[in-house]
Image (tube, rainbow, N blue to C red):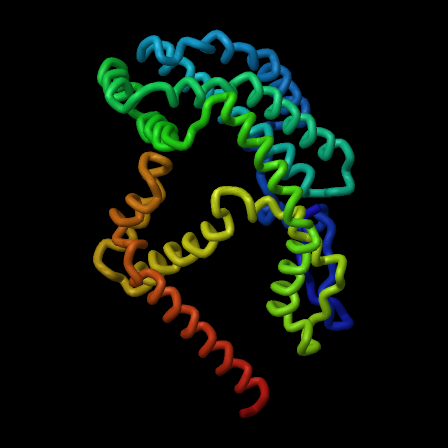
Length: 308
């Protein structure tokens, strides 16, 4: 159910059913699939293709041909999964009470898991290559150029990739280590952060003890410095927007070049080409200036409303 906040007679917002939302404000999911039946057919067709990836298992280092064919197939399957997952997820979001779309979302997640299990050999095989071999493969198969960034990104982790036996030993060690610091320690730490952030001790917002164990359910804390990606992304985006707003030279063109670069290079490099160097304090300073300007505007509006 898409919910829109409307002014109510009592001055509070009330939620509106999707059927009452103008069509122009709704998602056009028919652009993905014209009907649920079309989605089901596409899902069934893809489910019958999952084993195709296995024909390349053990062959990725043979030559450029099998590597290109495997990556092309993987990319194709991933794109279809993206469409299927987007349709099912957004259909479910339209009305979270509808069990049909919730089931569709679970079905596609399960299918994705099954495919990942089959395709799990890709990176372990790629990581056995060296940069020189990859460059030779790219020269032999020019179509591999679009995967060059991905291949070198996998190789970048090679010094930190363990053997299967070492991975098992590490997993066992980490498990034993995890038993040492009790969960109570993390709960207390997270609880202190929450209470300080929301002003619990100052009576601004009371934090119930139940929320102090929330850290267990937040994967952002463990996944590739995810929380830091938020702050750096906001900073870079604000710096780009500030340059565009100020009409600095070809800021608009540089922005379009940046978003069209996709995953062809590391973000730090594509941002540099867009004129935003995240290795300098410049973008952060621009962001802070924008935030201060916004806060000044808020204070001015509040003062005006209070008649000051």
